[in-house]
Length: 613
Image (cartoon, rainbow, N blue to C red):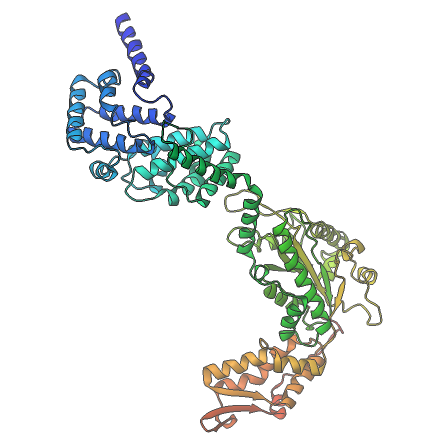
């Protein structure tokens, strides 16, 4: 029993000493990974079922994987001496050692382990060994299935060292370069570029890498990608005796990498611009002037020139401040909040939507009277903010359109209404000042948050209950809507009034709005039926007058057109005229009058509660 105990102690000592004792054969400054490869190498050779061909493949794999170390004497000239001195103490039996030396003789005779001839080594190994243990199977599908088992040793070495608390940024870079170089040497086609980042994103936390270290490592990987480093020789940290010109090239590479590391501010700004560009369109093309934006708004928003000029200035301010923020992260973004007031159908909501499309900024439409407090049943502000997400991310800049904002104080029911609406408006006040808002949990169950510091809030309301004789100021708007004065004062661009539509302005919308209902119907008949549809000016005036009479402004035009045009879809022959092959339908004033619906019977001289205005 005692004899067996001492034999176990002796075997353990020899196993631990074999690596240390081999340092008298190999250079003293080899990377730590080399010694792990050597241990794995002897473990592969000690397989009792191994054949001479297996020995040859294993030797070639070991030589090949060590080729990332830039010294051609490291393995080739030292391998036989290593076997002779340490083969038995490394676990090889005498018979296996003889077989291994015989395989080595054949390889040397065929000159198949010359480090410079990488193609012969690849063809001999075939990269046929794969990972079989459970802890190596985790990333198996990310890499080639026939990859050398030495690669998994390198991967494990990489994760163990990256997870250490004392690992510096410089050491992170060295570990990445070392692992990339090994990957380049164990396969006949490149795969690290596509696989390494996916590997680290998916398995880093599970391998003990802390979240902060994961972010640092991915940042260093981005730096290496930026300068195209995917085959790195020599490995940083390993510096064998080399010619002066090789050392000079290495130092130049180090200086090039250092430049990217030192210039952190530039890299950060580029990343911010790239992220913003994924969410913003025109904001990163030519910077539009207020006049250019207003001109585009007036194409479809007719009869509101003064209001569109003010919206043009707001759009310019948003675009310009986005540029300033990207050039200087310390720039304080001051959103140009505004409050649009005008009768139903005057174009308040549509003008804000058009503005967002022109300047290329994300937007959401919030039906303000429906908003409920957090924790209540119904749409909260967080619910609307969730709709801003694009590709799972929240944009850094956006416009929040608050429809019917003047009715927020009337939400709830009974005696609770003022208190309920007041709570929502206080929440909105904090958001307009810039706040970090908690959102609903994502698909993975984690809570998300977003910043409203660069969000522009534009409110709209008809203010139908405000007498026309009242001069609409911040104080009067607060009085008649119940909105706190401090909230109304947050609309820094002031109160923008849209004038009521006239018969002339509504006819102008019908005839000239490129995206209006009338021009849409004309295009429909032309493309589908090859018929030119025309309503004469007198007929258009009849439609405009009815819309004014019903007090719904431009919104009513499409509904009235629907009634007038309904009989035409059956293509009545008596209405179609044909001249030189061109077919036309012309609707007169009388035809329009005959097909308009009966006038609306108004109960109150104001739009119904809760209607979009």
